[in-house]
Structure formats: structure tokens, C-alpha cells
Amino acid sequence: MSADNGGIAAAPRYVLEAKGLCRSFGGFRAVDALNLSVVEGSVHALIGPNGAGKTTVFNLLTKFLPASAGAIYFRGRDITKIGPADVARLGIVRSFQISATFGQLTTFENVRIALQSKNGLGWQFWRSRETLSVLNERTWELLEMVGLAYAASTIANELPYGRKRALELATTLALEPDVMLLDEPMAGLAHTDIPEISRLIDRARAGRTVLMVEHNLDVVEEICDSVTVLQRGRTLCEGSYSEVSADPSVREAYMGLEDDE
Ligand SMILES: Nc1ncnc2c1ncn2[C@@H]1O[C@H](COP(=O)(O)OP(=O)(O)OP(=O)(O)O)[C@@H](O)[C@H]1O
Picture 1 (cartoon, rainbow, N blue to C red):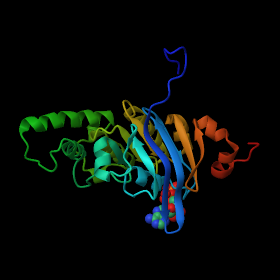
Picture 2 (cartoon, rainbow, N blue to C red; picture 1 turned 180 degrees about the horizontal axis):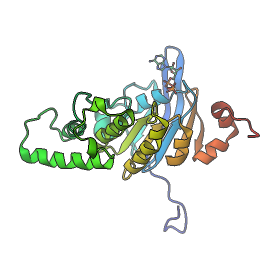
Picture 3 (cartoon, rainbow, N blue to C red; picture 1 turned 90 degrees about the horizontal axis):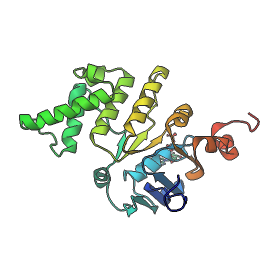
Picture 4 (cartoon, protein in one colour; picture 1 turned 120 degrees about the horizontal axis):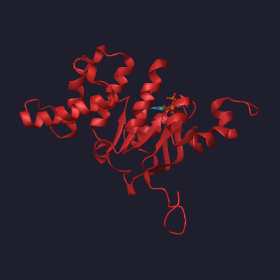
């Protein structure tokens, strides 16, 4: 990245940072002095073996769990002490394992409810026709964006699994997140659904930052700009996919590859 100041590269702007983040369970340090810097506008993957602490990091960043030590910053502001609702209000929104859809409602209703909650209309279904028509318009846009307009009147529970993921993405996007945290977006998907959900995430990144925990390394390679590899609650390695996948410690600890492969 060159800048006007004589070709000196501009410092990256971090949207989300963790410094010295720790979380213990009893005497066990699940997250151990973790430093994480997520560049604004990037798609950043958090990978690592089972039990490395990825989900705990997500829980700490979204304040579902308090940190034992360390600090979290959002655009340079210390948000270590604020609660989960305030984190969401700042635009840090978690999807997939948390944003359950309402199974008995239609695809359309699910997205509109998410929009209602974003717009402070809560559960008030009796709003003026004008208000609802604005919401309806945006609902259609979101459904089009994730390729679900054709299934607008389908009951969410009746959608195929891959389509449910697309619906979850639409309900998350309805909240207009600045930073979208995706918890294993490809987990449980059929092979054939993975390219489509990858494509949707790639499209959804426009104008926002994505931090995702993902085990599928092909997906990480394809859509992520940066990767942090966790091991035993610590950062083992950080960089682009090609950098981390070439790192001998990562190959040994995570990918289980021999050096001569
Ligand atoms: N509430 C808890 N109480 C006690 N131990 C916990 C708790 N939550 C997580 N742990 C432990 O912390 C460690 C990290 O767990 P975590 O779920 O964050 O790992 P992970 O990298 O997300 O793993 P996976 O890939 O299997 O989802 C594990 O050893 C886990 O057993």
C-alpha cells in the first residue's frame, strides 16, 4: 500500500483489537495473553485445532464472557468493560451459532423481524403501513442479495440446510453490522452448498469487516485476507493464508503436514 507521504506505507486501520486477552476456567487458561488485530474491511480467519480457544475468543469479543485480563478495542476505543448489548449496538454482530431463525415463520418474516429489531420497532407488528412498506422493501433487497427471494413465503424450518444458512446471513445483515463475526459458517454444510455460502460471505463483506472461525481451509484460503492461528489459547502465527500455511510450526501443530510435503 503506497501513500502520498513519499511512498511510506500507511499503517493499517484496526477495527477490532485484543491485547493481552486472557480467560481462565478454574485453573485452566483457555485464552492466554492473546493479541489480535483485525484490519478494517478485511476478512480475517481464526483457525486452530479443537480446543485452541477460538469460540472462547468470540465469546470474549462479544462479551458473552468477561475476560480474566487484557483489553479489547473497537476503532481504538476501549470496550473491555461494556456489555453484550452495547457491543451489538456498536455494530459488532455475531452470526450462525447464535442468530437462530424463527422456524415457524416464513423466510420473509424472519428478515423483516430482524429489520424491525434493528430499527427499534421490536415486536410491534402493528406499525403503520408506510413504515412496514419501507421494511418490506429492504427485506426484499436482503432476500435478493442472499438468493432467497424465491423462497420468501417458505416456512424457515422447511428450507434446506444450506438455505437456512443463507437466511441467517440475511438476518445478520439486516442488523447492518460493521464487524460480522461468523462462527464456523461452513459447519454441517453439504459439499455442494459450500461454494454458494462462500460466495455470499464474499458478497456480504462489502463495506464491513468479517472475523470468522472456520475449519474448512479451502474456504479460508479463498475468502480470507488474514489468518490468525491459535494454539492452546495463544497466537501461534499470523499472516496471509500462504504465509501461515508455509509456517513449519503451523504445519506441524495444525495441519498435520510433513515438512517435505
Ligand atoms: N465454560 C467452560 N468451562 C470450562 N472449560 C471451558 C469452557 N469453555 C471452554 N472451555 C475449555 O477451553 C478450551 C478452549 O475451548 P474453545 O471452545 O474456545 O475451543 P475451540 O478452539 O473453539 O474448539 P473447537 O474447534 O472444538 O470448537 C477447551 O479446552 C475447552 O474445554
